Image 1 (cartoon, rainbow, N blue to C red):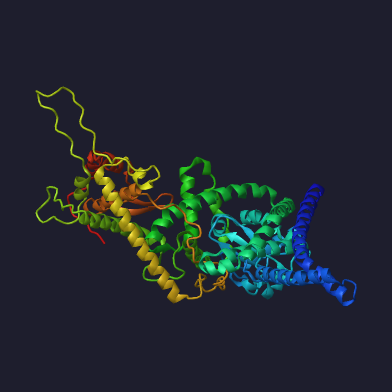
Image 2: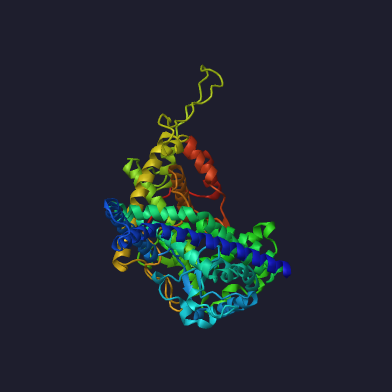
Length: 617
C-alpha cells in the first residue's frame, strides 16, 4: 500500500506541475498582451506629471497608445472567443439515476473505496471505451450533478462544487457482455481519475486547453464561410500558437493523471481486472464485427437494428463456440450481467443503437418511412431478403440500360422475366472451338477479353477493374454510377427530412425513461457519419455483391433456400437449413475470366434453376 500511495502521489505531483506549466503559458500570453498597455500608462502618467516631456516622448505616446489599444482589443477578442467557444462533447446517451439506480450505487461505492469524488452523471457511448468527460461549460447546460448532490459529493472532497465533477462515459457493449464484477474492475481506474481532476490547477489547465481547441475549431469551421474565417484569422493564429506552446505540457499532464488513477485503482479488484481486460478485447472484436458485418447492411437498406448491444452477446457467444481461444468465456453468462444494473435495458439499448447508426453511418435522428428499426427475429426477412432483391433489381436495371436482351435459357415460353441466366450469358466470354483434325495439335485456347489498363496508375477505378473482362468492367462501372445516384438522392432526402423535423440540430435520441438527450448544440452533426466504418466499395466488389445477390434470389425462388443471419458474418444463404458454401471464388471466375462453369456446377448441385425468373422488389 505504501508503494501504491507513493505512485499515486508521484503521478499527481507530475500532473500538477505540468498543469502549472500550462497555466504559465496562459500567464505569459496575458502579460505579453498587457505589456503595451502598461508602457502606454507609464508614458501617459509621466506626461501628466511633467516627467516625460518633449517631442520624443510625445511621439512615443502617439505611437504606443494606439498600439496598446489594439493589443487590448485583440486580447479581449481572443479571450472572449476562448471563453465562449463551445468545447467538443462526445455524443452519448445520458442515463439519469432513476433509470439506473444500481449502476449509480455501484459507481458511488467504487468512488468511496478509491477515496475520490464520484462522477456527476453517467452516460453511454456506442463504442468499446470508457472515460471521464468534463461538461461543466455553460454551453453544455446544467450538469445533472446539480440535482444529485449526494452522488457528486461522495469521496474525500466534500467542499468541491457538485457541478465540477466530470461525467462517466461507459461503452454500452461492456454493459451487455461483462458481468457486474468485471465492469466494476474495468471502471476502477476510470473513476479514480476524478481525484486528480478535482485539483484546481489541473481543472483550470484543462479548461484553458479545451477553450483553445474550441476556438480553433470555431475559426476554421468550413460552414462559417471564408469571410467569417478571414475576419478571425488573427484569433486563430494566436489560439494555434498557444496550443503549440502548451501541447507537450498538456499531454504530460494527462499522462500524470492517468498514472495516478491507475495506481490508486490497483487496490480495487486487482485479480478480477486481469480477467476483465480480456473481456474488453473480446468485446471490442465482437462489437466491430457486428457493426461491419451485421449492422452496416441493414443501415444501407434504411433499417437500423434496435438492439445492437444485445447482439454483441449473441456474436461473442457464437465466437466462443467457434474459437478455442474463447472457450470458457460463455460459462460467465450464468453470472449477473452488468446490463441488469439498468431499469430498462431494452429502452437504453434502443437509444444507443440509434446513436450508433448516426455516428457510424449518418442515419437520421428519428425513425421514419425510410429509416425504421428492425428486431433481430425479423432481420432475415426484412433486411437480408430485401437487400438481395434490391441488388438484383438494380443489376437488371443496368442490364436493361446496356441493352442486354432477356434470355430464356431454354426455359418455358414466356419466361422472359429477370433470370440468373441473363447475367451468366452476358458475362460469359465465348471460348474458341477446338481445332479440327487438320489444325495444329494442342493449341491453347485464346485468353479471355480483359480491360487494357492504358490509363494513369492513379486511376483507382481502372486499377480495380484491370483484371476483369470488358463486359464485367462496363457492368461494374454502370452499377457504381447507379448506386452513387441512389445514395446521393437518399442523402439529400434524409437531410431535408432532418432539416424539417429538427431545424436547430439533432433530435432526441433517448427514449422515455432514460433522461433527456444531449443538447442539439452539444455536438456538430453536419458531418455525419463521424466515424465511417468502411471506405466506399470498389466497382469490382459492387459487381460481385450484385451477382451473389442474384444467385441468392434464384436459390430462394427455385430451390427453397432461405435468408439467414450469422452473428459474425452477417447475411447468409441457408440451403436445406444449413449455411450455403461461399460463392466468392465462383463469382470471381465469372467476373475475371468470363467463365461461368464453376458457378453453374454449384447451381446444378444445389438444384437451382438459373433460367427461371425471380421476384424482385
